[in-house]
Length: 494
Ligand SMILES: Cc1cc2nc3c(=O)[nH]c(=O)nc-3n(C[C@H](O)[C@H](O)[C@H](O)COP(=O)(O)OP(=O)(O)OC[C@H]3O[C@@H](n4cnc5c(N)ncnc54)[C@H](O)[C@@H]3O)c2cc1C
Image (cartoon, rainbow, N blue to C red; front, side, top):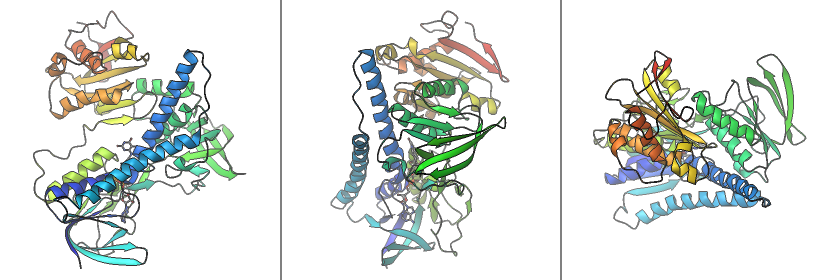
């Protein structure tokens, strides 16, 4: 029986990162994958959906510019766009695979073995790998479970991945549907609503239980996103509950019940169900192994499961499901196993996130909704994109920056939210300051490149310090500087 120091099950972002970190410790590592290397980080997930989003955004801005110059719009070909997405997916997947192969001819040659197949734990130290009729068992000292997640199926919905789809089927359509309903107004549902409405070929319907989409998000952010969605033709069914969905004559019929008791029936070409994901742990271990799980996934203690030599990372755990978090956990688990986690604890509080909407929304730390829920007093400044030269040059000043700091001196950053063009790049300056536990003065004094969106963040900080270029009491509506004390706003006047 072949013996390894470490077996990693699943070659998505978290498993791949774990295996590569184990090589740094010169451990003999086996990485097992039953499907595609890169997992949902690449295929039917993060990279593919972001490629759709980028292409949709470019198409929408191209259309807008043609209109501006009174030029006729060319027609958009679905198959060409789909092929471009597939090229992006293949490029990344091949890179990950080629890298593993090339390691074989480097000085890491005897360390990483990759096997294709379905893995199952027979005991805490034995793993069975099945590939068709071929089965083999390997021995290992440690195991990292990185088997990820899959879309949640609701039994009452006729999901066939052709007409009623999840993220697994949505990228394989034959053409742009003329209409599509999206069940679930969370991040993934809203991202797909943005993508399909952006191409201008699909009438998108979005079912929303509440009175606004993205219920965890600040109201001012949601307002901009909803307005843009509606301007690009998205029909948001607010305060509604899906009571029936059927496939009829190769189309989708669905019925909604609104909070006021009214009911309405709609007919669309396709449906996308985006109601969350569930962890992949069924059949992953033999009954004798007994790893503790909850409904949300494996319950781990800083990546270690209740079985001391078995670790769990990424979407299979009950923590945040993101590529960067999965990679962080994968690397951390290996460092824990081999005794070198360093001074950094595994913390989830200040993870930077992006929502790929119109426009993009980037965040790090707390938003106002969370600060209020936690009963924290804070100071908050907002600055409209129209005050930022780079946004003016881009001819797109829609958006704003919002910075939250503690209510005492010296002020420390609680969180920042940027909604607008290049938000995801601009957020990094603040994310770094938060992770280094630095105050805001550093940001105020640093010389940023001009013109850049980060200058807007600097202006926010200077407002808080009473030394901004533009004064909030003069430019009301574009700038604001307030305190929230026990949930009540008070303007700050310098
Ligand atoms: C539509 C969509 C968009 C997303 N967008 C973003 C985004 O913009 N940013 C972001 O950070 N995150 C995004 N995510 C989330 C992100 O893709 C996941 O958090 C991430 O892929 C999780 O990585 P993972 O390695 O834990 O799991 P996965 O990526 O799911 O990989 C797990 C791997 O394990 C394999 N596997 C499972 N069971 C076995 C077994 N028994 N034997 C062998 N192999 C097995 C699977 O085949 C799979 O390849 C998105 C997800 C979706 C669905």
